[in-house]
Amino acid sequence: MKNEKQKSILKKEKRILLLGIGSTENPIKPVNENCHRPLLTKYSTIPVQATRKFSTGDKHAIKSALHTLKEDYLKSAFVLNAMSNPYLKKDELRLLLYFYTELFNSSGLFSTISQFKESGERVKFDYSANYGREGWLEVGKEGTMRYENFLLEEETIYVLDRMQDFQCNFTSSTIVTSIKRLHDFGYITVTEINLANTYEGRKVHNRTGTRARLRHIRLSEELQKKDISNRWIKPTKSTKLKN
Image (cartoon, rainbow, N blue to C red; front, side, top):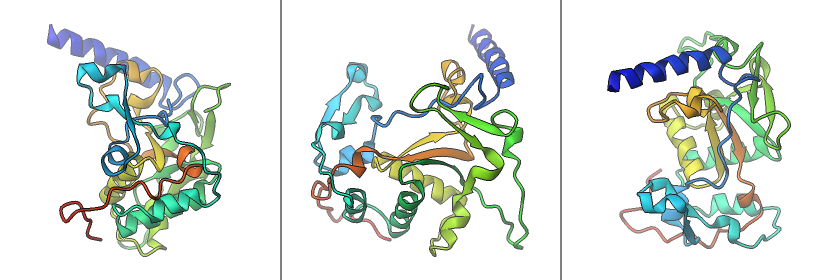
């Protein structure tokens, strides 16, 4: 019975793959900003609230009530929220401030692998062969507020290479970890570009264990408007980070 179910899922996935990942027929579904932010709820005094799934034991059922806080209308709110966080590593802070300058009032498509070999030779990655349609990647459904499209060859940003200019010691794996931490703190909202995060793929695909070389990233709207710099829990000896 289990094998029959697996065969059915694989058959559906093959059909969905023919539609494309991030195509007009099967666009990427952007992650909601008001999603589970485990590090924000763990290390701040911002109130939390339980969703309807709390009774099922779903770990994503507890969410930060950041959206209930009043707006402070400070132009520097996002930077204050970043600089005041005692749980960010030095390179993570630099990465976050890079995203702030790069993504202010916009969003971007980021690759977490390097364009260059150790010899310095440039490697060309043809993302359009695996994503989107005719070189274009679509995020959100056309006609909705979250709809965007990206020309993959021209608009993909190789963030690992960019961060070398900031003297950061990232590798492909560590920058992925840091991007996830910034998402979990609520600074950015990350949508991995893969089958699981398409409108059709999410119906049948298991989200766990999926890999992504591309990520759609946007800044938190809430943390650009609200000052939470005095809401971080004071680190203890066990929680203090070493840069």
